[in-house]
Image (cartoon, rainbow, N blue to C red; front, side, top):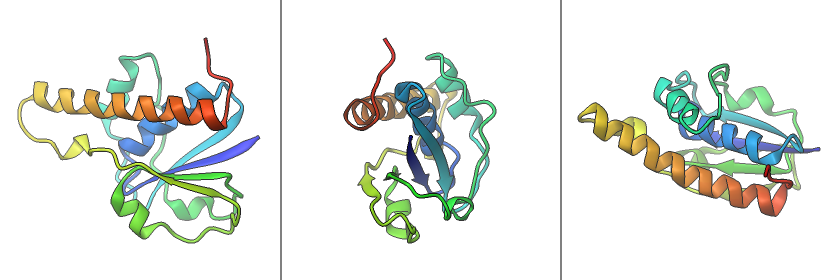
Length: 143
């Protein structure tokens, strides 16, 4: 079984969404982990935005990347530029490192409608990325 780490700054939003989508799209063929350079707690809007599309991340926790240093990862995916720049060295010498910067919807201010629109836009971008990644590297995809 392949091990995949999704890394972000605070492991609160983008990495959590990617974790949920990769769990779904891998169909149980991979161990998915998410972590941050820091921990900021799981963003409630990330939870509710994924729930809108039937993915439950309500029981996820915000974890520090150091918790996973002993795991031999096949893939390390950074989902923000800050995490890519500060990604620690792993003993996973053969890990494929991928980077895809997604907009941080938690940084949006304004009306609730504008904030939710930003979360949904980021959710769609992460969904598209994770679906393509799983198809290429993890298959099978559900349905």
